[in-house]
Length: 389
Ligand code: PSV
Ligand code: MN
Image (tube, rainbow, N blue to C red):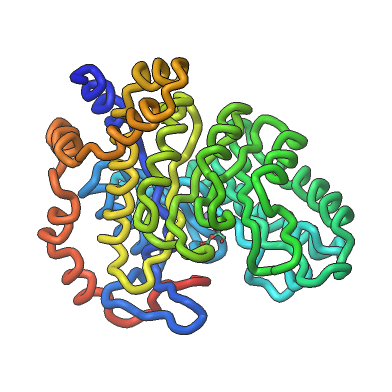
């Protein structure tokens, strides 16, 4: 057991979690977006807020950007700002869902001129990657149709494959194209990349720099997500997670809040398939919106939830598990897993933080800084960042 604890501590010390810039802007539902005092007004302020999450947790050193929401005049300056704050720029997300031209699709649009525009947008994103030192281009394709017969399903896939080839050709060596899937929304009959299989097929066709992104909120209720995790790891194509929680649809709630056991089962596959090591290439990103809760503490809580699930997964006694599995001991094997899940790992994480000179309670440490009051007092005027800016 001591061995397991020591190994868990060593593994936890290497884990990092990437934050989404949009978590620091205002967001909401189609009914209401609630503003909050002190919310960031531009990408520079979003990075400043993200740095607070890193300062209190010590494990969130990167921030994903969304283009055009995080468009700035000078990306070198933005990257230097991040470096001054002790963080760096992570994945660059393209945006194919907020332009009038994309009503009938973007990379799959029947009109080649619209497809060309959508591809050119990725050239801009790759330029941002070069300027900021980012290595991941993340593409979520919203394209789809609302009615049977609206468009030819096969033709849309063929157009998609061709467009993706052009996007892939924009990459530098060392860059990755991360392709996300989602089963529905904003269209409700057929989505052009609805599932991991479709995403994986396109990745395999493109080449080794293309990998799948698994957004935990993008599956039908009851989907066994950890099975997908295992399957993608098995073929070396799990590039990243977009972590969040869902109760109903793509709710983008705090990861580990709706179903902490599912998060544990996912992390159990990650650990069991040796994919926690940073060199495994799996980027543990968050994709969340904090609509009613304060944003910086919301991100701190999210990071801590991922850490707790990871710690529990690291405490699974894999030798005992294997023995029980091979002996056909159904309840014994399940019991080994549940023992780890039911362990209170908070003391272990306190130990980890102490060993790194970090605050033992990140949540309380952030509250004690008074940063929330400072930004509320200082960030007067201007427009708060939100969905679309
Ligand atoms: C789409 O629902 C998505 O999960 C994609 O990752 C987008 O880029 C992101 O949400 C925006 O929050
Ligand atoms: Mn996502």
